[in-house]
Amino acid sequence: MTGRIRIGIVGTSWWADSMYLPALRRLDGVDVPAVLGRNPDRTSTFAREWEIPAAFTDTAAFFEQPLDAVVIASANDSHHPLSIQAIERGLDVLCEKPLGLDVAQAQEMTRAATAAGAITLVPFTYRYMPVNQYLKRLIDEGYLGEAFHLGLRYFTGFARHGEYAWRFDRSEAGSGVIGDIGSHFLHLARWFFGEVSSVGCLSRSFIERANRPDGRPYERGEDSALITLEFTSGAYATVQASAVCHEPTPFGQVHEFDAHGSDGTLHAVCDWDTVQSVRGVKVGESGPAAELPIPDDIWNGARHDTVHDTYRDIFRGSGAMIGDFVDAVRTRRPCDPDFAEGLRVQQLCDAAVESAAAGGVRLSV
Image (cartoon, rainbow, N blue to C red; front, side, top):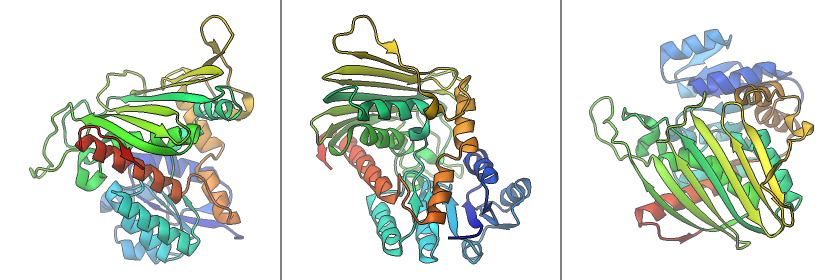
C-alpha cells in the first residue's frame, strides 16, 4: 500500500486518549480522519482535542468514511460486531483484548479476518515492555535449560471499591479479571513457554459490587483468580491475577515473574514505579540471583528512570505495537500477536472460567 494510512478510532476512553492517539500522532504517513463513540458530547470533545475531522455516534456512518484500518478500543461487548463490520468493509483491524465475549465470537472474528486477508493485531501490551522482552530473550537463548515451571503474578487494586464497573459485568465483559488482566499474562505464559495443553482455575469475588446504575442486577465477574497451566512440553505455570490488592505504586499495580529450569533460575519484577529488574542464577553459581542488566537494544532509547517514562517512550516514541500494526498495513506482512493468538488466549480464558465454575477441575485445551 502506498500513500497515507487512514485509521479510524473506535472508542473515546482514557485508553484511546493515552495510548493510541499520542502514538498515532507521532507516526509518519498516518491520518486519523474519524472517531466513533457512544456519547455525543464526549465524542465531539475527543475529536476536537485530537483534531480529528469527523466524529460519529452512528456506526454505519462511521464505516462509510474512507478508511484503511480501525483501532477498536471500546468495551468488550462491542469487539465482535465492530470487528466483523470492519472486516466486511475490507479494513484491517487492531482490536483490544479480550478478543470477544467468548470463544464463539473470537472464532468468528478470526475466520472472517483470515478469509478476507485482513491484517489484525491484538495489543497484549506487556509483551513490549523491556523486562518481558529480556525474559523472552533469555528463555529462548536457553538460560533455563529444560523449562520446569513459571510463575506470573499481576497484582492491582482497582476492584477494591464496590461501585459498578462494566469490567465486572459478564454480559458486557465476558468475565472479570480473567479476561481483563489475566489474558495479558496468559499470552505471556504462551510466549515464554509455548503451547498449553490443560487449564485449571480457582476464582472468586472478594468485593461485593453494586448493581448497575439503573438498579438492575447482573452476573458478577471474578475479581481474583489463580490459574494453573500445563504446557505440551510438560512444564507448568501459575498465573495469579487479582484486582483487590493493596499496591500503592503510581500505577497501582505490580508484576512479578519467576522461571525455573534444569540450568538456571530467573526472577523479574516491574513495580510500576522505578523498578524494572531481571535477576538470574545459573546452576553451579553460588549466592543469590544476580542482576542481569537489560541490554541497550531492548531499551531502544526509552527512559528507565520510571516505568511510566519507559511505557510512554516504548509506545509513543519508538512506535512499538501501533507502529508495528501500521507497518503491517502498509507492507501487507502479517502482524503478531494477531487474531489467531487472541483466539487462543480467549480459549484459555474461557477454560479458566469453566474450570473455576466446576471447582477447579482441569480441562484440556
